[in-house]
Image 1 (cartoon, rainbow, N blue to C red):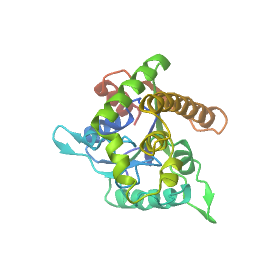
Image 2: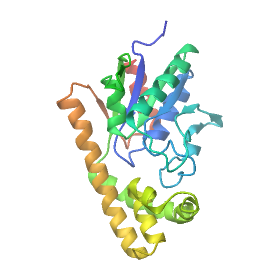
Image 3: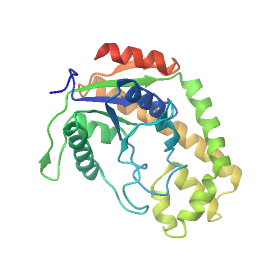
Image 4: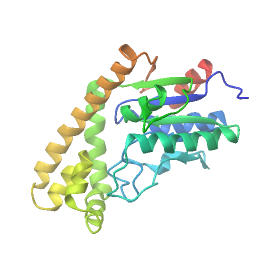
Length: 248
């Protein structure tokens, strides 16, 4: 029997709100928690910079925080919400069988909601999980600033080179379907956009994506009955961890 009053902790929020480093620090502070990624693009191998895996975030005070559902399929494959549900349940059962706490962390609202609302897909309905759901809220202007700064950093870190490598084995059409970074950088790589056009259009698309994420999360809370405890994303991680620990 778990020592916690919930079956699951969920960390959600818009892109650039700092979900992963916070979730990793929470897992480390708890000492018996592991992270299950709920991101629709982090499942793909080789799609690292563009999807924002930031695997170094899972190392806290020199210790590796265990994570799941990252790098589990090849780029070009059509991973879907049903497969996510199945993979989530497998990871969940593995973690809880070892008497540890799963922390679901991500920004793909459909994936998160499919677990929290126990969607019936493929004639399968998985058990509902009692979740403490934490949302990271961030001021819109600060979010926009962080998105722009992060985009510049990822381009400097080799995002174009990453897409060029992917194009050796994955069609441009397929990469474009992954949206955001992979769409616009691919269009640049195949000569349909200039660098400046790529940057400007991608920056706008990411801002719009963050807005859609918040719309989805508000719908989860206000119309679909999922309580979300919102925490200021700009608070120090230690303070946010303390607040969550007090809720458990």
